[in-house]
Image (cartoon, rainbow, N blue to C red; front, side, top):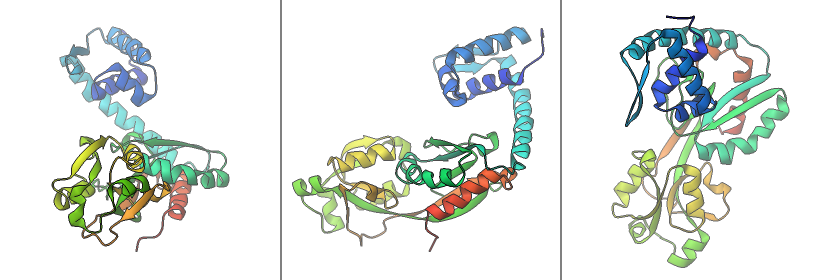
Length: 295
């Protein structure tokens, strides 16, 4: 080994190991791919061995890389634990706070109401990450995560915010063109806008598979915002959350008494090390005001 290992270099190595490419690692760490490549080259020069090799599936660790990964993950755990402990003791409602949620929730509910939070705490800097994957709170990928199901990780702190009923929606233009269904049995005659594989297996998709097994799908979308936009543009019917579908005035709710439409739960989740953090506390108090109490 020719020099001291720097934590930043280990962080870049772990990001490439987890994401497979310089570009994906750069997106995760919010740095340029060229920076990732440069720091990895410096790390390999420091240890004197090759740590990653290129394959058709992306960059994977060599034998030396696998050994380094074990040590790097231990260093990461200690660094992140220290950050959480120090951040958790911070009593200032100032500086950055990371919130993550699905794209539809972020666009139609959180962003319009963020004005209230910022007016109350003008020194708070909100980092809002709208993505489908569940972020790792132990790695500080987010401080507060909004999830549409109760978290499975028993160590996390979770607060149920509200119920999220789903309804069948269609645009006024589509209904004028194709007619308004009056019963579930008529839904098979209509075009449908549905999620792609990224949202397969969700309760709303399970309901549609059960009650409209021959649904004529005309468009699939990878996120809720695009799904809602496609339905509102008149491409077809869609099963959407009542929480944010009404924000587009072109959409009309159909079949309010339809059997078994899912009702999901919205949860606010944070790491226990942040339970006394003033920024996280301010966000949780704001969220409690944004969403109605569970029935």
